[in-house]
Image 1 (cartoon, rainbow, N blue to C red):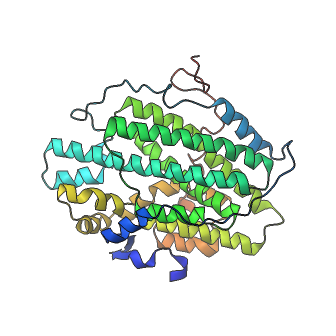
Image 2 (image 1 turned 45 degrees about the horizontal axis):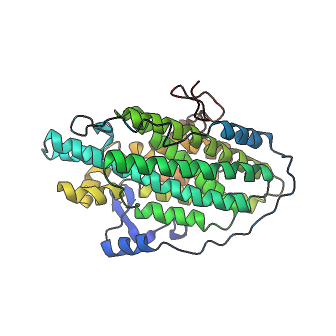
Image 3 (image 1 turned 180 degrees about the horizontal axis):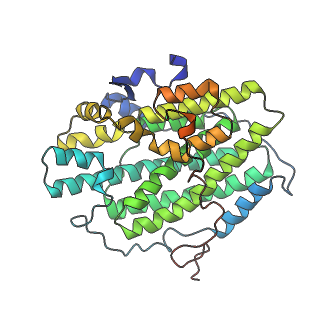
Length: 379
């Protein structure tokens, strides 16, 4: 793979057959996080058809209107959480806690590490929600169709609600908000600075939202905190609409006679660069952030983890169920790029991809959860 096909070449480290992205210079990381403002040029687009042209997008908008919920009112913030008895998430999905266990740490230390890992992942989701808010604000301005603007507008409010819910859950129930992973910040800014609405939609709605749904599904399954389970189920229903918006919009793009072969190839390469960079930097951030507290050298632990026989397979789980099937269906994985995906281990053969994905499961299901409808009223 050439350097032009990859992001962040200066941060690449080889662990056996796996190439990871590492940010080890604390000064560089601090400087990156402190860079709060940057240019994100946009070409604003008017739309004069107020009746609507894309029935599926208008339907998503209609569903969004009735699915609104209130993070403060509809979640049970009075629920007591005991971090000395609960784990937050299963230890099996906490690499830091497993490392503490391997080093002979006490059960109390393992539990603390699990909560730290849980808080770190929640914090990254929180930062991602802010990026989604900013990007959807852009989409409302740059998308060419009124149906897209309608839905992007509803998603802006969804993302505000998610930011509120995650920030309150972390600060009230978990501990502290961890800083954004530098690799995630880099990629989100790439999407914010993308030069077309198609790249913004593909990068956030299809790739990041799809991966976030994979993470949220895992957290939903493995948590022992009812408050978090209720919150994440609500967030997932919103996110499934967002992912569906991305899929419908990109399908419309790929089927349009106005989309040239060169543009399709550019979008295909864009998708690969984003996912390759996500995959390469998927775990190192948590090692770097939490490892020193527990006497774990990030590089040593990364070397051990990435050398395990199933490391590549485990790394690919978030993508094979929630992202890659849709890229393939959209024509954004072709024979030209399939071998690149195989080379980095995201899947070994096209036939191994599942035929269905959880990325949009629930997008069309208006069934309320927890006995309340989406206006907040009790059924």
